[in-house]
Amino acid sequence: MKSRRYITDIANMMMSRAMLAVTLVVMILSDAKAETRMDIDTVSADTAVVSTTITTEAIIDSLYNRDVDLYEMPRQETGYDRRVHRIRKHWDSLIPTQTIAQYAGNMGVFSLGVGWEYGKHGQWETNLLLGYLPKFRSDRAKITITLKENFIPWGLYVKGGWLAEPLSCGLYLNTILDGDFWDRQPERYPDNYYPYLSTKVRINVFLGQRMTKIIPHNKRKTIKSITFFYEVSTCDVYLRTMIQDRKVTLWDIIGLSIGIKTQLF
Image 1: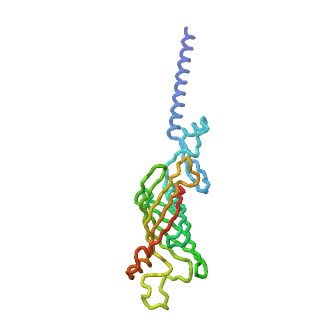
Image 2 (image 1 turned 90 degrees about the horizontal axis):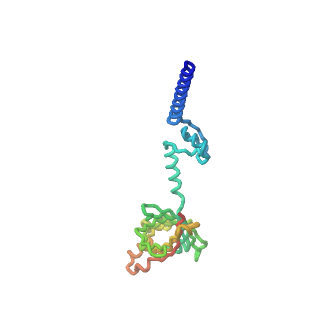
Image 3 (image 1 turned 135 degrees about the horizontal axis):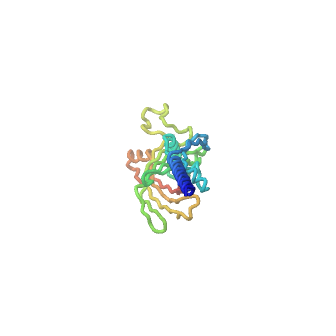
């Protein structure tokens, strides 16, 4: 009788200790899961040291799930991260999003260039173009540089993936790379003989229209869309001539140009 009671007491004591041990293990794991963190310094491709915080839960998950990457676990964004993102965003904005080819327009017989679009609806564009001007009756051919600003207030979608832009307008500055042209009046001319004007830089204004073909997503390879446009333009010298000479009409000072633009992304 006593031996049976003794065995029962021993069994109860062992059971109590086992329950206590299990409770301690659960508490330890809970504390480790909630509080234990390891700081691992990893060197990125740019040789910048990034501090990554990894929880015990992530380590346990990585042991049982091969898809979990400890070095890609989410972490709190720091001031350094925000600065890097801001710098990269500024540099990304310098990447051209357009290519342009234009015939005529007071910028050479043929011009090629790149462009950037911006604005809430992409209604503003800035283009930088190089133009070619044959020698004609001069001694040599010449190269022109044009900085152009476009404004497209609205567009209308039509059937077949086309976008009509009834109005495009803007201005551009262009110069010619040649020493025979000057930006200030030479001393050999009387004062104010050519007031406020130079032969090296021209100010142009234009109006035009566009038609854009939008390429479907499943068929895009190198470009997003292609645009065909025409522009009617004039420059400051022609406007001055028309104002000073009543025999000169508007049709005498305007010119027609055509072009094509591709939207890269």
